[in-house]
Length: 249
Length: 226
Image 1 (cartoon, chains in turn purple, brown):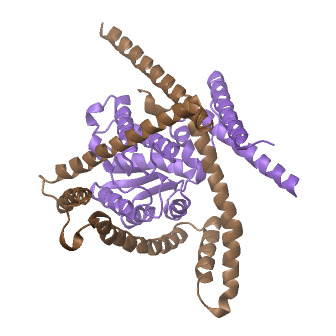
Image 2 (image 1 turned 120 degrees about the vertical axis):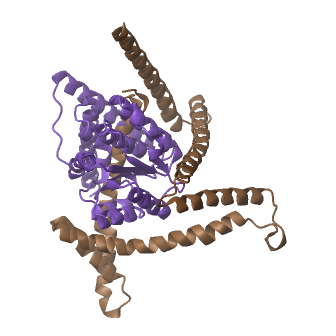
Image 3 (image 1 turned 45 degrees about the horizontal axis):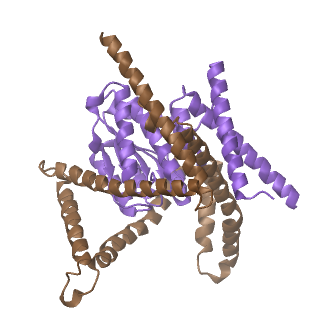
């Protein structure tokens, strides 16, 4: 009988093979797989463009996703989205506002912002102080209230909150409603996800958080490979559940 | 000459990327294998050391976070503008909490407070009370958000969402004639809600694996220069 380790290695191996294989095939064929439209990722570039046109800031946040804890991968996925959106507007002198609760993620986000400005050769516009740390940790209502006020005081046009959030997300959503700002949110925490679905202009659900790079940087074969791997894993799990249900019936 | 220098710089950066990717690959795989190996095996002990190093790094990063907080608010003080007062409150609070913590550690309190830990008591009185008060507002925000959702776009998913919210709220009412609503609520919570939650969690788990693989392959931007 297979134990938990066997399943773990099976899933990891499948993910490896699919990511490498699909990435290699895409780059050899010079054709990327067609991705299904996700409203959240269609709304994000629009929000960036709107902030550029209105000369206002973007508010980006990975929430309480923390590098070095169980939400490390969420933090990496969320900061990839922050990079892609910042890079899109990094020819400007106005940096986006980033709010978060983990200091290690703060250091990583600062580095990614620097790289985003470096990519457009506009490093002089990069300001490390636009990344604001709220020392509260997970599910902090004070973070939600504080980030909402900070975003208001910095004249933001849109809030893009992708990462780990709890009920505190409702405060930022409420501020966006009151001041007619764009609000796109998603959380790996179920409570936060429920709030994100209700308040978002364009929702993102579940694993869609982890494919942000593929949608926002569509020319990358690695990121596209990740989407194919995710789809393959999803189908493998669906088939495994159906087989298990039939066997146990 | 200048073009030559640029090419050399680009090469150097790519070498840096390769070193970073190799380090990540080696450390990542060692830690992953160590986590599922016996704790007293060589690879298990090595993984434990890496994890302890990560813990130390996280502790040092808190200092970076505190510095960021203080720099942001100190920067706002000289220019007296909207919100400057709150920055002053933040700085004074940070100083006061630090002082209280030091006094707690040195058992310096006297009189009625002798032997007491004032820090946790202050946290309970101020922070927990404030957070509870704010948390109470979340319900009203969500009801307003549901109203706005229906005004913004009426879809089948939104209708199902609204119906579920109403059933769950009505189900919690302590009315004798409405016991059926309680049963429907229980069924909703046990079957569709549990199934949906598990679906979302499985999806998030799979997403985590694919991004994790990307990290282990050294393809993540965090350790690559543009």
